[in-house]
Length: 177
Image 1 (spheres, rainbow, N blue to C red):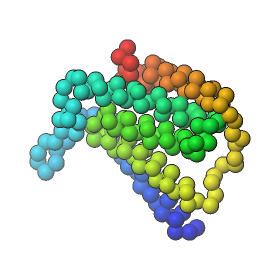
Image 2: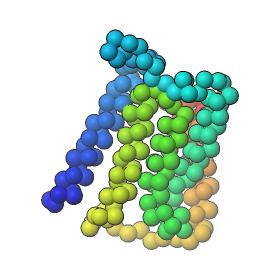
Image 3: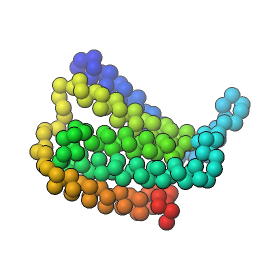
């Protein structure tokens, strides 16, 4: 095992630990304030997003960025020209998903959780350039018709995530329903 592989495994392990710490924090400490050196510190972006209009814009921005993120993840399985152009559309989708959630959610747990995913996706994309083994065997790449299928399937998955999964599992209505 060479030094790059050891460094990749070490950084991936650290990202996993940070991700788990974020999950533990979200479950056991849902409050919006933490105490540091005897003083209470707000852990949300409410200081920056102080009006309802700004919070609404952040939520609309999140919903707008999530559609291409979901389409990119679907396009990584239904390979077409999107895959050919991006090479790793799933990593691009994860980066977009994490960045969108960082914009809309400012609590410390979300920063740890989505920041870890963003860091992992960025590091993984960079490390792919230096890996000798690209991973899975190559899958044939289709044409524009596969992109159309990926976009339609991505929109359907996006609607399912927003209307069913997110309100039921996460407890936050995405579309205000």
